[in-house]
Length: 166
Image 1 (cartoon, one colour):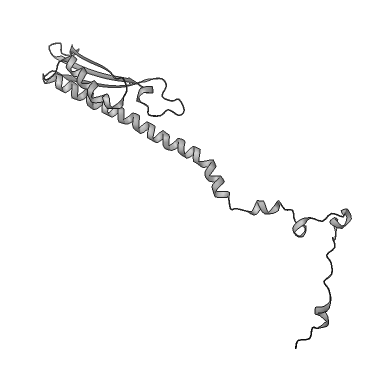
Image 2: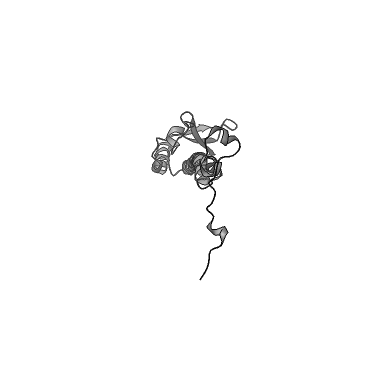
């Protein structure tokens, strides 16, 4: 049988406020510390909050990359179609009207209204030769997929191809 000692039988002393808190008669919770103090050290939601601040900027950046890539893609296709239409006129496969229709049909998948102008003009350097010019233009607002900041509301995207008659 275990016999308790005298030290185990003594009741613990009640805690009394000491120092500054003893003078006011108020005692704080959690051992004299502020209950808000733990929130400053709690890092459980810090990464979610940082992500919430960074995400709009990241989405704007990625959207800008996609938008400028799409505009560059349209401009590249316009230049290729203008060069192809000018080549077909220079080899005699198409006349001006057929080349304009050809260019509009090749760019129809984009869903924008493309202005196509094909002309046969005398060469300014050598008037005995004919210069073929095919110019394609579209408003930037039509070429843009999504315009978040209104950067593409004004302006025109142009592509031009110039060849000599063969």
